[in-house]
Image (cartoon, rainbow, N blue to C red; front, side, top):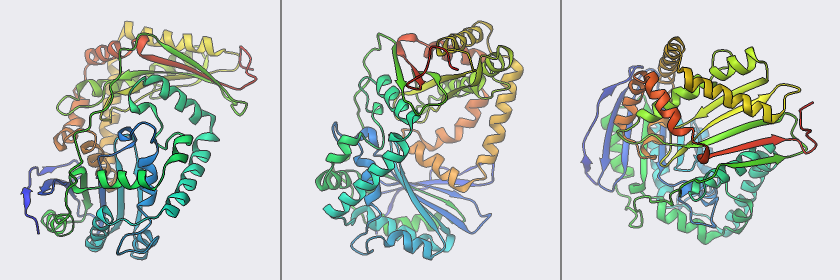
Length: 443
């Protein structure tokens, strides 16, 4: 059994009364334990630092397809039995793939933790699948793409806009993969991805719930400790964006569209370890501009006062290893063209930049964020996801702990500075989604 390389590093209380403990194994696996004794339930998660943005050119979709194959079987578990065993023990399991990570989780009674840890460690290194399995799951993924993307004009529109925003970075390709590239994936592609990325030194273990940190560490050493690290795991270095010298515009027409809208996205900085202040300002900026149809800047001005829009909004999520995006959208009212709706959106933003944040509005948003933080900390699975996603996107446990206070310390000046930095026309993509028969003015 391998000894723990780094003992308990952090023991911090959270607002919900949980305690967070971290340790690392000699083979490079990191672990976070979130102790919360209120219910005899545990969430066990393994996160890999491998997502769609880590795929080689021409191999889009390999990370997501391998996620499907992880449920096939191992040298000890028969094909299809993994989830059946979890269910037979009263638990549930699933997985997810993003641009920066792939994660697997089980939620189960606390006294079954050792069982799920043993099973997850087994499929980390002893996965078994065949070319026939690849063919079956490829068809499942293609059907998933048909349902979620091909049959959804908004999803297709989003895919095109994202590809236009990222000129060179792999964030510009869809997590599920381009259809023609998914069709070309074979056994060798999937096996190479698995052997390179699925290893303890590329993984983060997160256990939340009714557990003893020392016992979790003992079990981690027992089941994950003996696993050999992958020698091929290297620091993640991705293609970066060149200077954006021209704003991009696109129109996507589809006869299935019943409600046209205009949307603009800008490149925006991500949360970085020890440097989250700009991301915090952008998080609050998104709430101020379009977080509510009643109280936000665009909602009040465009929906309530001018009545040129039936819906408005803005969005930003700083979670990511590399630059993210900040977006604004407006759904025009009947009789208002997309061009006029876009002009109104620009006018609302310009007014905000001139006048600045309303102090009372800012105070309300901070109170709402604080309340949401307290409620979120009451969700065991949410806590586990918070730490897992952070550690696989370049952040630290301390960054997660600091984030709520950083949000509360954002000032009006911080918000305006961040807004002026992000709202650069040459770093934007503006899109119109409309029906194929859409007239100049929506009827």
